[in-house]
Each structure stands twice: as C-alpha cells, then as structure tokens.
Length: 362
Image 1: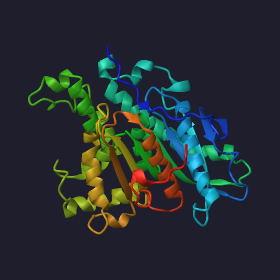
Image 2: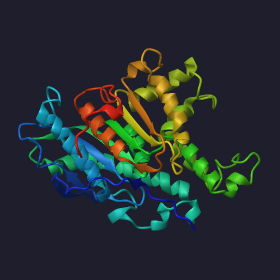
Image 3: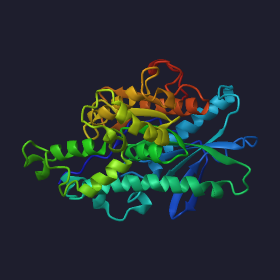
C-alpha cells in the first residue's frame, strides 16, 4: 500500500550548527533548546520560538530552522536594528506525539492509502496532542532553563511545518501566551483537508454516495464525535462554524458577527500570522486552506473588516510551483517574520517584496 510522502526540505547550505544546544527532560518529553549560551547577560526578557516538526520527522529535523532564525535575530542585535528594548531569543524543538523518541505505533502516522482505517482520528488527535504538549512545556520548561529567575520567557512564537503547521494553528488559537505563528504547508480547515483526502483515496464513505461525499461526515471515516472536536478546536470549525450558511465569501450578518467577535477576541486578538503555502502542494493543497484564509483576511482587513480593530496581522504567501516542502525562500520569510515581530515591526517584512530583501546569510 502507498505511503504518503513525508514533507521535504529543499537542500539547504549545511554548515555546522553555530548555535548552542542543550537538552531538557520535562513532563516526560525531551526538548532541545537552542541559543541559551548566546543570550546577552544584560537582557532579562527572552522570546521563545517553538518548533513543531512534520509528520514522520523528529525534533532533530528542525535544527536548521532554529539555527537560521536565531542567527538572523542576533545579526539584528549586532547591527542595532532590533528595536529600542530588544529581547533575547531561544528556540525549542521536541518530538511530537507518536514521533521520534515518542513513537509507539508507526501505522497511526499513516493515511488511508497505507491501510490506516482511523487516519482522520489519528492525525487530528496527534497534532492536537502535540499542541497541548507545547502549552505544558511553555508553562514548565522556563523553570528548568532559568532556575535562578534572572531571565524569563515573556514572548512565545510557534513555527510548524506540515503536521506541525496544523498544530501551530491550534497553538495560535488556543494558547493565550502565543502571540505569533508561522504556518508552513499546514492547513486550518480539517474537514476540507480530510474531505479532499477521502476523495483522492476513493474511500467508500466518499464515492459510494450520491452526490459523492454526502455521507462522509458522520461515517466511520469521520465520526460525529470527531466533528465535535473539530468544531471546538479547528480554526475553520470554530470560526466559520458560526456562520449560518456555507457561503463563506459573503460578509457575515450582524447576528453572526455578534457570535464571532467574542471568539476572535479570545483566540486571535493582537496575534500575528505568517502562512506559507506551496501552490503545487498535492498533499495539503492550498485550496483546502484558501476559504478560511480569505474569510479571516476579510475579517481583519484594515478599515473595512468587521474585526479590523482586533490587532490581528495576517500575511499569506503562496509559492507557485512549490509542492509539499519547505523551501529556502520560505525559511527566509520565517527568519524575517520572527525578527519583525520581535522588533514590533510589520509582520510582512516592512512591505519590501520577498525577492528584494537583504536576508541574513544562512
């Protein structure tokens, strides 16, 4: 049976990792923490970038991201462009549930095509669990890193790739301490993603109905109890689930906005988002994310959005011709986004087109 491809990383220049790394065992999880030794002694406030790895990968696979982002930030510190009161920066990666050192049932990481009959249940529960683990580590890891309390983590950002990107959406929405997220080839709409995958996999629950897919939701492939979790935690399920129709292109009615505004305030107010997608991604197609991203973009649009006063920053970039992979250009975007957030600058890189930026050499 076919196995879904694991997300790829384009070949990057691979000099030896120049940032320090230490390991901590907290709450039953081994975490790799990058950049502790480089923290300036006079800085007491520290930002932390949490790295969520792709499916079938491990915490070690995010090491190059940690190295690139940290070096980019410290370059800003050195040249004086990190703002008036710059923070220190560290990065943390850990194995997601059922991955790396925590893998217990490899088949649960596979899809329907590989014979995993509970693919939809497994995938959502896995990355939701990883997002919850990130919250636990955000609470307890600082006491291990800085036991003398001379420094403290005051800002949390999350970056996730593929499966980690799905999880990053959940961390952004449901962890109050997370103020910014970089989602790389991830999806905020689980029902749409699984529907696409069921159709491509020719699941009987999809193809043996008229019209096709009419009975998929509520079938054994996507049980009603799973839908209940989606409506509570999935970005599209939680927010677009408040709409009275499936016409997501229209402006919500006044009654719908009354339901939506408290949720937007509680889950997204003053948070910054960078979404990076591959235009040729067949595993997590951008078409599955586009309805929610368009809905959110209209909601937070300056002057005209019904949540324009919520302080949400959304930058959405689709890389044409790119498949299910994190490219060097995507990494550059992430490096600049993190630095811009930490300097309280615009989250889209000061309005300079991606190809014209003077990126840190990584």
